[in-house]
Image (cartoon, rainbow, N blue to C red; front, side, top):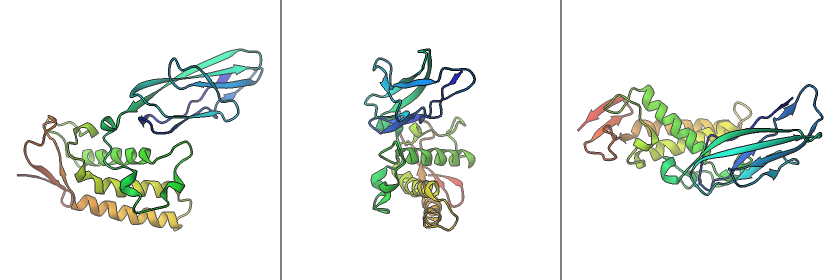
Length: 230
């Protein structure tokens, strides 16, 4: 049998480099062996032979859900197929709270540490955004209807930028640290402290009515965790 494994990000921004990795695909039991690996990055493009690398680096120019198709051909020409869905978002849809230009002044050589298959840290900014939204939910800071805030609900991201950029830097350096106390671990701790302080200082301007407009001032004091209405 051939067991196809497609490793991709779940969400990618338009024109941002991403990697479609099928290197974990394997044969088990009685097979004639794998002859070729092919990937079609989206429906209608056509298959690309990736047998040598077993991955395809790509950037999507249009938003929406894209269907990735993988075809594995055995030596006896038996074919095996599997698909996966990747969501592509515009900059506006992604609505990230920070971006690389916000963090590069703190670490001029930061892009030496970009993950293979990528050319930016947008994935880390997205992780920071998810963590921030989860933090609001855990603190029981919800919209008027009792539901949690999503990225699309944030009308003014400027209030979140400081928190997001330091949290992103923490995530980056935690990811490349391989020993407690190494230089990357020290940097991660430093940026964690700055992220916590930024959160405490921040007054989060939210849109509790989810109408896209801050019609009243409803500010959250992150130092006390209290909702202050004005």
